[in-house]
Amino acid sequence: MAQINPSILSADFARLADEARAVEGADWLHVDVMDNHFVPNLTLGVPVVESLRKATDTPLDCHLMIEDPDRWAPQYVEAGAGSVTFHAEAAAAPVRLARQIRAQGARAAMALRPATPVEPYEDLLPELDMLLVMTVEPGFGGQAFLDVMLPKIRRTRRLIERHGLQMWLQVDGGVSAETIERCAEAGADVFVAGSAVYGADDPAAAVRSLRAQAEETASRTCAH
Ligand SMILES: O=C(CO)[C@H](O)[C@H](O)COP(=O)(O)O
Image 1 (cartoon, rainbow, N blue to C red):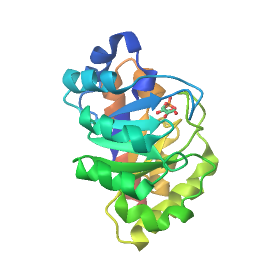
Image 2: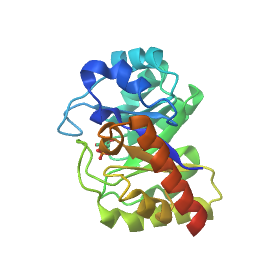
Image 3: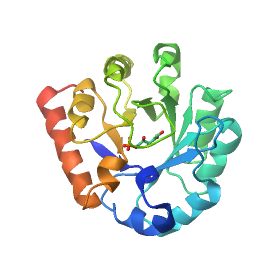
Image 4: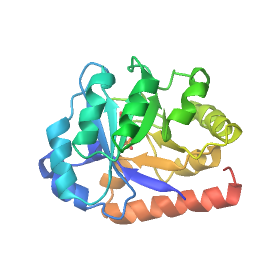
């Protein structure tokens, strides 16, 4: 079943509560945490996640584009995140961190920048509930989808199947009506969409439309 996670990076930050409610019906709300070190942009932190938790019933999918996630990720679980994604390139002890996130009761996920291969992390996959393959360089919304990431999505799907894992495969960056079918064909099942949702006249309708496209593609291709 395809999941659509609107990215609040493309929302109006002065109206975050309203913007979160505008996409109710989405599977998760994707919360982009950036620290201006791991990526050249600065967004929000733990207090905003605590407030978002109170503003919407949609579960929060926090994507930590920050240095030292080993220190900070547990605080995002405490703030109400249902899923916390740390970057492989930033985590000092990814297995320990994933176990910590799960022990706190949240889903543990790991993200890979475009130039980071999945293969070195094959043995870690059972420790994760989701792997995020970035389809743009992290840091900004509205970038063009990187088609060159499609083989990595396919290889990741094959690794998940080879190990018989139930984990989700998320893509993030440039996901839209034009690109979501390629992602679904390659084996992604969780789709982050920022500008394609918040740039639409009716964000909730955009979520439904993207989900229908992804599900139709998955059922047609039987990619996973
Ligand atoms: O993590 C991100 C950027 O680092 C955003 O989630 C992503 O770019 C979503 O925006 P868009 O769908 O407009 O590309």
